[in-house]
View 1: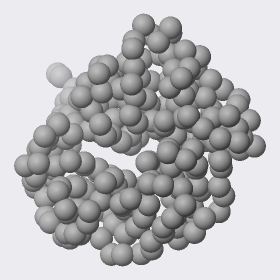
View 2: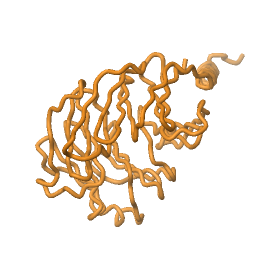
View 3: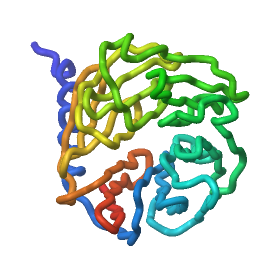
Length: 271
C-alpha cells in the first residue's frame, strides 16, 4: 500500500504557492499621495521615504505623513538607503556628502567624502556595522568604509575581474551580499568582503529591492521576484499601466504594494 504522507508536503507547497499567487492578483487601493517625487524607498516596517530635490519626507505604511527633512547646502538627494530604519543613509553625490538620519529624520552624523579622497564616488549605500559601500567610477571598483571611515574591503577593478564594461546606477547591501546594478549587463553580486561571484543578467533595470535574499523588480506592469541562487522567478501583474517605480512591503500585515506614477504615489493592500 502506498504511503499518502509521501505526497503531503509537495502537494501542500503547491497549494500554498497557488494561494499566494491568487492573493497577489487582487489589490485594494488604500491611499494616494500627491507628490513630485524623484525617488522613493521603504523600510522593513513599511514606512515610505520620498525625495524631491533636497527634501525628504517620511510616511507610515498607511500613507500618513510623519516627518520631513531638508538640507539646503549639499544639493539634491541622489540616493537614500533605509535598510536600517533607525539609521538612514542619505547620499548627495554632487557634493560628495553622506548624512545619517534617525527614525525621526533628525541628523545624527555627516561624512564628507572629499576629506577622505573619495569625493568622486557615484554610488553609496549602508553596510553592516555602520559601514558604507561606495562605487568609484575612476577606478571601477567598490570600496567599503568601516564605522571609523577606514577602507577595510574593496573589489579591485570590476572590469578586470568580470570582463564587463559597466556603468552602474544602484548599489545595495542586504543579508551580507552586495548588489550592484548595471542596466546594460544586469545585477552583479558580491559577498560581504567584495568578492565577485555572480551576474544575474536582468538587463534594463533602473530600480530594484532585495527582500529575504530575493531580488524584486518590475518591467512595465509586471513585478518579478527572483532567487539569484536558484534562478527561480515568480511574476505577477499589478494594477498600474505606467509605473515608474514599484516596491513591495512583505514584512508587514497586510502586505503592501507601493507604486509611483507621474505625480502620485499609490498604496495598495495585497490581502
